Image (cartoon, rainbow, N blue to C red; front, top):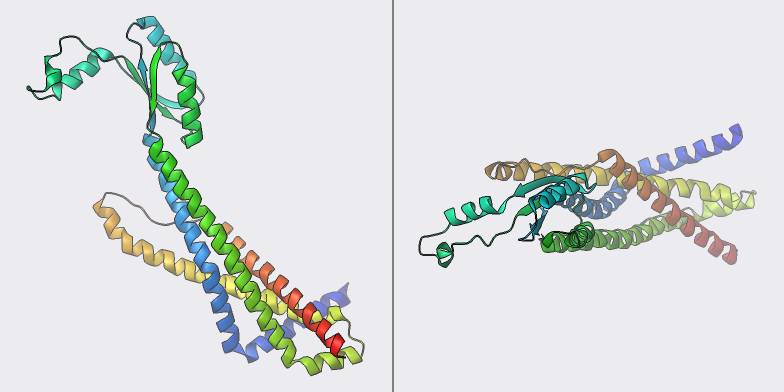
Length: 303
């Protein structure tokens, strides 16, 4: 066990020594990987913050229940109690027809045609705020409440929610597509880098195989090199992302104050860091594994 651990430690030291000798190219590779990882990460942060802001805006969405004209007062009261007990309802506000009529008439001009009406045509109404405001839940609750006794019309202005959800879903799909494309690009970049290193060390590899070195022993340093390139690129992506978010927040701070808002981009750095660095390390390992395997196969054929 100790012998195998020493082999891994020696491989890491060897890779680090090689990277120090070619520090400029190492930093360049890590920077390229960092920029490629930062692009989908920044888009993800933007979509996630828009989604959070949407949840706050949706707190104002509501279902309006207009009751039948001939509904009894006791039935209207019972309907209100049913609404308050509903698990999906967060707030209920009742407006009786007389109050609604007075408010309606107070806002009319004297020459408005409706000002000549003598009878009140408005019904009693409940305005209901929901705990779950995604389009599917709103539509389902609207249909459910429309079927209740005493309800003439259950109306929900959920069209803007559906449009916004569709845009958010499109944004999430764009993040996924961009991440897949850039992951493929990173795999190619790291694989080519490892392949070039193998070509420059071809004679050393051939001598090692002549004295009995196994493919696993030869492959190990290159695998660690790919993982370190990926890890360095992940850290570079985090730095770029942090700088971008800080710069954006400073730019919009004054604009947000003019609108009485404290809007700013924020994210869960612990989870995002783990995903970015972990993904980059895995991509680096996979790219190195396939690059080394292909190169060793070619060397065996040549030999």
